Structures are given as C-alpha cells and as structure tokens.
Length: 332
Image (cartoon, rainbow, N blue to C red; front, side, top):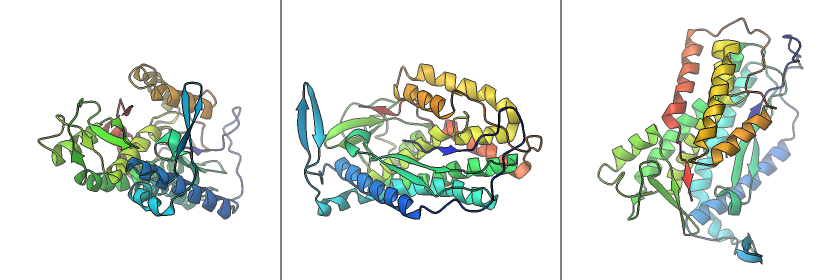
C-alpha cells in the first residue's frame, strides 16, 4: 500500500498560515525504530511466502466456511529467504519518505521521521501498508511545497527503476495464460497472482523478453516485485488530489486551479474500479484523508509561483504518473 504525508491545514477563513517553531520534530526515535523493525519482520515473512517458504508454521482455523490463518511459531533460519524482497521494497519506501524529509528540513519545516506500518502478510501480500511522514508546521511558499511534494516520488522512482530492471533480468517466462493488461506473475505460498503493466513496465518487459513478453507470463523475481511495487506506490501518490504528492506538486505549479484536475482524477477512479475494485478503495481513502476535499489547502504565499527549474522538476514529476500507472494492478 501507498505512503501518505499530511500538512497542517490553514484556517479556512484566512490565508495567513499558523506558523509553529522551526526545527526538528520531537524525538520518539525509539518508536519509529520499533515500527521499522516490525515492518522489516513482516516484509521478510511476506518475501518468504513469495518464495513458497512458511517461516511462521501457519495453521488454519475454520470459522464457518472461512479458513483463517494463524502462526504457530517462527523459523528464524527461513526469514533470510525473504530478504531480497524485504530489503528492496523497504529501501524504496525509505528513500521515498526521506526525499520528503530532507526537502522539508531544508525549508525549515518541522517534520517527523518516517512511520512504517507493519501488517500481517497473510492479508496484505507484502507485509506492510507503506510509510508516511508528518509535517508539523505549514508550508509557507509554493517553492517549498513543490520541493517537498516532488522529492518523494522522484527519489522513489530513481531507486525503483534499477531494482525493477535487475529483478526483471532475474525473472523467468513460464507457461500459462497471459493478457496484455496483466503480463506478470507472482506466487504467494504457491497461489498464482497476476500483476498489471504500465507503459514503463511494458517497455522493460519487451526489452528483456523480446520473444516471450505478451505470449507467456513473466514470473517475477522478488526484487522485480519490489520495483513493481515502488512504481505502483509512485503512481498512487502522484494522483493530483488534495494532499497527496501529486496534489502538492500541482498546487505549487498552478495554485487554486489544482482543484479541477483533482476532481477529474478522483472521478476517473470510479469507472476504473470496475476493472479493479482497489481503485474504489483508494478513492475512499483519499476522500477520508482529505476530509471530503480534493483541493489543496493554501500556502502563506500563493501568489509567488515557482521558478523555471522547479517548474520543470514539478512537471516532470507529474509526467511520471502516466508512465507508471497500471490500470489493472492485480488479478487474484
């Protein structure tokens, strides 16, 4: 699942920001470290599951017609099997969030360290719901907003691409049915799951598997899955809605006109939900996180647009969205 970053909103009735003291956010380093450790464990387990190894000695409880998995132990020696996936994916998430963190600190914005969210791999496939940082003071200029908003997607993208490439190079075409929308395959405890494609993924698949791509599913190496997820997270965050990264960047570029593309992007998720129900879920999450709004809250200097270099960086970040967007991400 994707990474959120919140901004303390300005009073709806005034354009004057409520400035909080500069400096780093309060410590709580131990809590952040605990979350990271738990997420590392859960993603290691997920990575092992992807390799067909069960380090949790899973058993099942029957409740009516439903089988509920539960762990009965932990084989530490089996966790190492999940390391390629866990280290690759957590590295991408950490790079994304630290991109935001460094940019925020450069502009004197009070910001937390990343919060990682562990989640039982039985129910999330990847062992985490992502990561986020909290900005504890308002962003005072559109330049700062663009830097903070664009830095995460760019950082995550730059790391995801080589991880994806090396992982794809280690992946293998296998016999089986395939479609143009879902040309990739993973196995989770032996169960097949198809993954979707984007323009960038299609190009990479064609380049590395010129004879097999499109005719046979590509069984992804765990590193390739980590790169695939990195691009998926990038796409989710670049939707130009509210306080998602794309909303930050677009507001920095065009100011209050951001609300119209934001509404369009949210509206497009509704028909897309017909082909993958997760888009409905994501639309609901966006709606709740932004408290029913698609517009971005104002900064303290909305009349000051970013310069040419920052504009190019912001436009480039927004153009990553159609490059990495997969209309049908997962078919189970």
